Amino acid sequence: MNPLPNTLHLNGTFTINGLSGANPLANTAIDLDQSTAYFAYAGANPASLIQAALKTGYNAGAWNGSGAGVTGAIRSAAAAIGPANVFGAGYADSADALVVGQPANTVEIRYTLMGMQIWIGLLILLMQY
Image 1 (cartoon, rainbow, N blue to C red):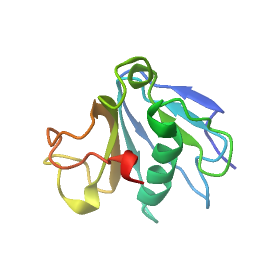
Image 2: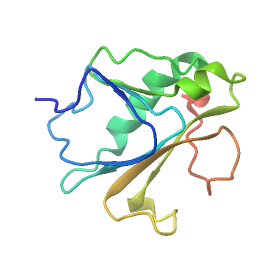
Image 3: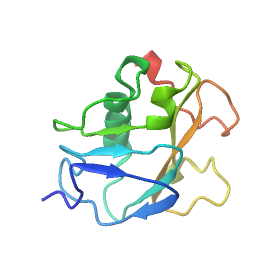
């Protein structure tokens, strides 16, 4: 069972614990807006699930993808109203050890500039997928 509501609006910095199952983000839209969220994991790394939700949220650059379906969506209202392909959501997996101070066993997502190496190579350029 998915512990998240169908739509989750974030404003700040959060740690999300306890996601389990094959599709823990199914039928959920997470609106990152300008926030940061850490998905903590103890077992299987959810990075591929988060990447799929980011791709759905990206929605060809509109950042308004629907959470309906097995992947869910991680989107950003702030990126949706900004200039196209300037802002978006980036991710970093602590297993890659790219972000100094990132908590172990987390996948971090945050509102960020697209295509820039400001966030130490952690941006996922969803336009390429």
